[in-house]
Image (cartoon, rainbow, N blue to C red; front, side):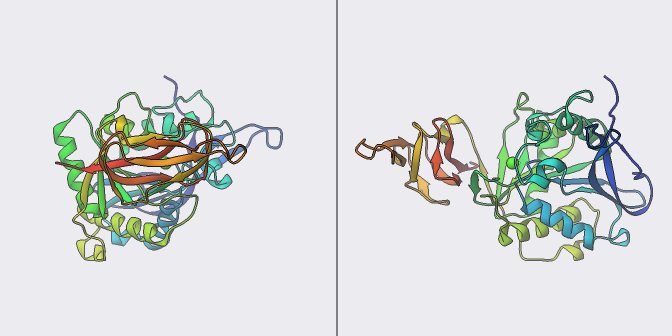
Length: 334
Ligand code: CA
């Protein structure tokens, strides 16, 4: 396969702190020889592990973007041993527009891995991550939130691989991150997610959903800020004394075992949920009802839970189309 067209003047091997850009060639009428300039910070001090931290994979998920901007402002080379690569807005066009997918090509970065150097902008970004950044890293965190359409009970997560030793390392990193909930995602090789590409490169791959509704929750930002310090200390990149703070676990470990954990809108209309985040429900309980404000004499259409569990995610918008996910559940790891 051909090489990435993305280039940078940042030297990944140089000690010190560099704030620069990944330059993604993007030739348009306004700018024939122009680039999309994706900000990148590399902080390095001697030998040691590399942590690659990114946010803005989905542009309308903000807690990670804020926390990584703050980390860039505060973290200095003398604080670390090894290397930290930080990209707060990896799908920059989406982040600048405040939307999930890129306005350039409608690309959903987290459905585009392992990418394509000859594809559109979003595929080119995925390919650069997979072929340049992942091979440099030992530990990876891709910080998400629910975005405009979903609200989450905040959690950190890990992606399972087919390698038991790697899974054990990732579980230990997830516990070290110390979020109130630690979600364990199953290995899903066909999903084209960043986390699957990362575990395929033998990285400890963490993620998480730290809020949603297209807003910035201060509690979610605090969980990310503290968790990243905990994680960098766990990796031996910063001293444990630099990671002291309110969130140090133990995380409640949870999982999502099947499609039965998800409830989808049965009809288009206005959805009234019957539950709140954190509620415990049983199979057969009413999840909510769809109302028809353009035909109010029609009986509302209920939908039901297909499994037992705790409500960890809810749709944010009131209007639904048939097939929209309105709620999903998680259960404690046995
Ligand atoms: Ca997301």
